[in-house]
Image 1 (tube, rainbow, N blue to C red):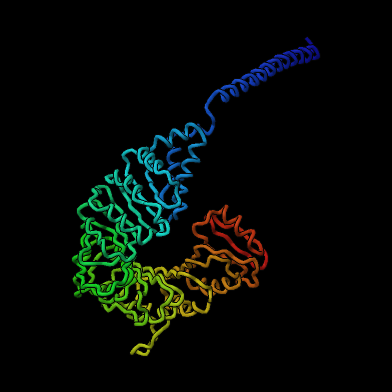
Image 2 (image 1 turned 45 degrees about the vertical axis):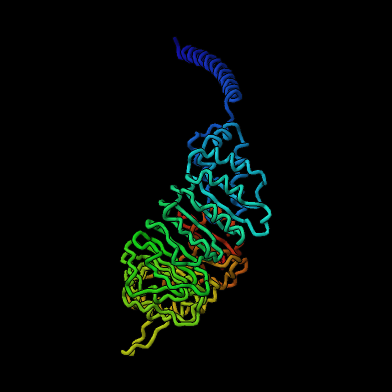
Length: 519
């Protein structure tokens, strides 16, 4: 057989293979089409896609969407019930999951804005079955006194053994006594948290708490008149008292009314007139955080002994005219965080404060306090030393409530620069609680220029105005926008900033802002 014949035979074989493969391809395509049709039929006959989420994951989503928050307004609290109703209307499965999950019905809210039919509270209690309850009574002013609250309270007290949290806020002064009367004699074995506005009510000192609520751990009372009859559970760990003023207030022994052995957080605000203290007489062995905003601070600080105290917050109380100093020597040199949470520091004894809290690692202050803490004083040795120089372990300075008058920061900048020149470690400076409105970009840049060379600068959140007339020396401003997702920052800042913005690195919310065009 010649070469021509061999070539023709090979061609015939290839053509036959082509016909076979083409036939198989046609058959495969027909099978694919048929299989797709079968799958579509199965999908149509199967459950809706919205019901394909595992029930465990669905429950986690529902718990997130229906979570109770102490800062909710009465409208938002009622919104939880509406949100629960809207979710249950999505599909039969969602309705069944919500209906059969008692924890999703554990937040009971009573307000004057709710429907007048009391049956819905009774239904919610039944659906919550045996789970602990969070009870909130709010937004019931005296103007609604004609709308009796007692029938609603009676329904709730029928399951008082399941109360876990009780919040009574924004309730009228004439409504409150009825609520307090209803609490008398109740057994509250599961109650762990009470948050109540007392309206300066002295008739009901809440002396029932130790016997009726043995599990109580967190107690917060607003506008409360402390009397010798007051007592609380010995195992309370968090105590917050906003003390009202009462004429003729009797002398009170602090140790007699406050549980000292279990407290980890203590907050006192308002008037302590009439309290008696002896130096080093209040032993708080577990106290971790102390917040004071009272009219007579020094006697309290001298009386407290707290070997584990790590966080101290202070604000000027009702009387603001005196020089602020605690006079405790070095008793609190182990405190790690010191926050001056106030805006009116005009008479701080900065040198005394920094000596008393010389071991702090983190200081939080308002801009008005910068001059007091960071301006040098002439010492006996004729050397200049700022009060903050006593804080040898300082790592971070947080400035609260900025108004961006950058000249206020000059003492801090000079102090930070001197530290760097002496070879001390670079400190972190954090700008927090920024104004809610847009900030002028040029002013921000001026402040940034001053702080960036002598510290590690962090900014919690800032919205920039669209007009910027200055630039940094290298044309670049870098801001760390903490807590802002990158996609949100893209949408927010690219549209509101004049100039080009370039994402850098892989950290969310970290951007370069170019003021003079892209380098």
